[in-house]
Length: 256
Image 1 (tube, rainbow, N blue to C red):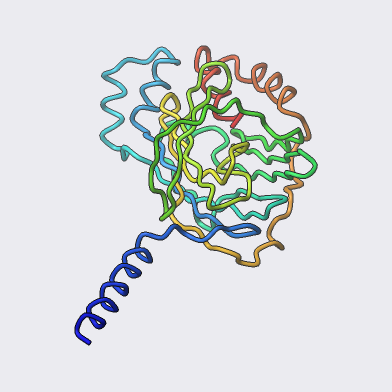
Image 2 (image 1 turned 180 degrees about the horizontal axis):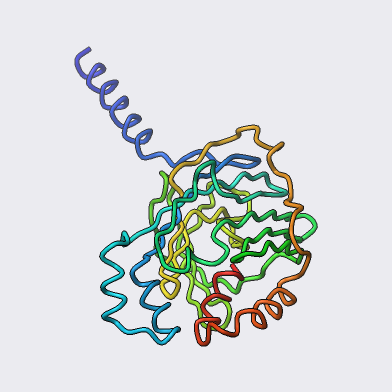
């Protein structure tokens, strides 16, 4: 009897251990992911001053009144067919940087994975663009490195965008739907983390709500001057010539 009781206790302990280490359930249809976007404002200011002919002493003095990091909250609502990425309610924090925050910091991006189309609403300085184009394509290299994000085991992938911006992504195959923050997509699972060192910016999921009926919120934006990405680039380069070398950095942000 004692040996039987011991065996039962042992089985219970083993099962408990498996339960604690079990992977999150697969999400096959729909849900909502909360992302935190963090911008290193001090490094961003260094780049801004460099592009406008400023000096390090001026930048160091300005940094004393500006927090090192700016944190904003976004939501990605998704099904296996489409998604909408947008700022959460009161999710955009006030920018204390001179000349305002980063370009296109309030993007609303609708992706349709069936029709291979994307519609993005971007507020760039004083103008709003409505970008209609195909889904962005990325040449991802999948690695053997892993990281836990929002409770999910995520695999690392890497790519280069806009010729020179290195991107690290972390995706989970426990969420079978495509997509990720901003316009990122194209990995075998949902992207829960993005790191772009050259832009001093990161996006990481902080919460995943599974199988929640948010489909009614997946509505493509409709306001703004209609262009595709190539047309927007031409328009911005012409209107921002006075920014000198910093124009290229602006274009990196607006093209995300």
